[in-house]
Structure formats: C-alpha cells, structure tokens
Length: 237
Image (spheres, helix red, strand yellow):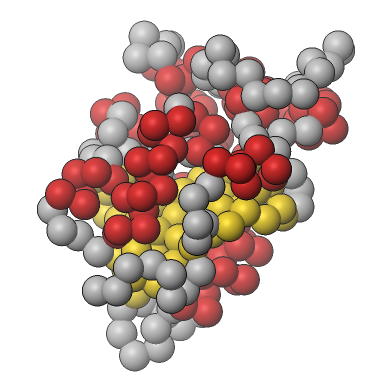
C-alpha cells in the first residue's frame, strides 16, 4: 500500500455513503457496522466518562443532542451508559439525511432516545435548548461556512457543554485503519469511506486555527480530536 502524504486536508474527496445514489444494501450494512467501528476507534466510552458524565443530573433528567447522528449508535450508547450509571439521559439524535433517519428509527428502541430528521439550525429557530450537545465524525464533512454555523448553533443550543469528536489526520492512522479493516466489513463502505474521512480530517493545529473562542481543541487516543465548549461558556438559559 502506498500511503498518501496527508500533509494537508483533501477536501476534494467525498465519502461514498454521502452519495444519495449509493447502493442502499451496502449503505444499510454500513450503518449496521458503525457500532463496532465506533467501539474500536472513536473512544466515546472514555469521552463520556471524562466530559459528559460529570454534567449528568442526579435529581432529574439531563437532555443531550447528538448532531449528525447517522444510524444512531452513539445516541443509544450514551443513553445506555448513563442509565447504568444511575442517570436519566434524554437523547435526541438529529440527521438531515432521510436514509440515516429511516435506519435509526428502524432499530429496536432504547429508553430515552428519539430521532428527528433535522439540522441544528432548525432547532435554533424553534428555540430549543439541551444540556449537552455532541457529535461524532461530523466536522470533517463540513465546509468552512458549515463548520462555523454548526459551532455557532451548537453553542446556542447547549446549556452546559458541547463535545464534537472527530478523526485526527495522521499517516499512521491511515495505515492502521487500512490494515485493520481489510478483512472486515465486507460489502460496506466502512474501509473506503474511513480512509476518505482520514484524508478529509483535521490536525489539531489546523482545527485550533479555525475555532473561534471560547472553543478549544484537544487530542485523545487513538487519533482523535475533541472540540469542546466548557461549562460556563455556553450561553445562559
């Protein structure tokens, strides 16, 4: 395998599953595989424990918005983890893609989780607020104007904190993901789109230059970037 240089973001490439004409069977198998892929590479169990669980109420429900939720695996996982820890977490997963919304709605229900076909701007227009706002593997999909809008709207929607988790671009990440997924996930877009995502993703310095204050970026293993808005910097209710 010849590794790309990855010295800069490649925003000319797009993921196959973002094509509305892509194979629906491969797309469905890709959504089904996300739970395993995210468990392997996304590190959300650690992110939940460090950055979300401290904000969960003991005396009532906490609300959370999962932006660009795709097939909804993170929305369901967060609700399950919180329930095991004795918290009532009410999760709303949103995605504008009708295929993702249909897939998420078709899965067995999890207590406290609901899905909507919507964008963050729709919820801002409705005057909605949530205690927490998160996303997974969303930021690298966005153009400059879209990124600015999602950050601004996330801040408007969050009462307590925001956590946007994404891939950190690195040649080693590309090589390891390529090798690890070669025999796995047949007839899905996982390997092809995962490698495309790495090519589109940011490094920490690149993203730090793009973030308006008070947003912050930090690295998390393995090959993750966390874009966070700390408690107290989200707008007051």
